[in-house]
Amino acid sequence: MNTVIDHAVQVRLIATTPGPYGVPAVLHYQPADPLAVRMSFPPEISLDGSAVDWAFARELLAEGVRAPAGRGDVRVRPCGPDRTVMEFHADEGIAMVQLNTVDVRRFLDRSYEAVPAGSELAHLGMDRGLAELFGAA
Image 1 (cartoon, rainbow, N blue to C red):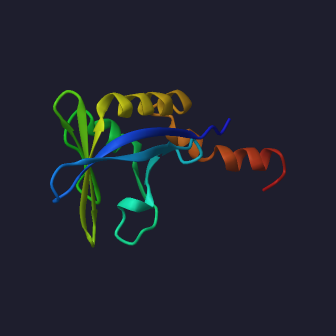
Image 2 (cartoon, rainbow, N blue to C red):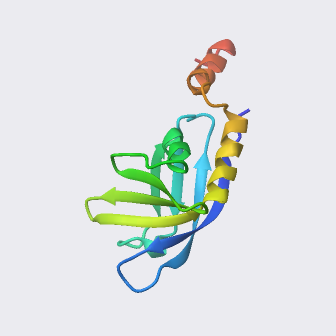
C-alpha cells in the first residue's frame, strides 16, 4: 500500500514586518520515500510568486518537536509547550514559521502508522522488489 499522507496545517509566518500572520501549508509524507517529509507553502509567501516546497528528514521533524534539531537548510525546535518553530535557510534569506505542535505530532503519528520508525529502509526497496516479482523490472 502506497498511501500518501497530506496534513493541512496553519503556520504563522514570522517576518521582519510587524506581527506574524497565518498562512496555510501542507505536510506531505509518502511511504515510497519513507525517510523524507515535504512541506508546501502557497505562492503568495514566496519572493517570486511560485509555490514553495521544502524536503527534509522525517526524523528531523520528530526530534525538533522535543529539542532543537538540524544544522543545515532546515532547523526545527520547540517553542514552549504548544508551538514548534521551523527555520528554512536559503540563499535569499531565512524564513521562520510557527506550527501548532499538536498538528505536527498528529502528522508524525499518521506517518508512523504508514511506515513505523526503524522500518524505513525496508520500504525503500519495496517498489523495486514488487516490480521484479511481477516481471516489470
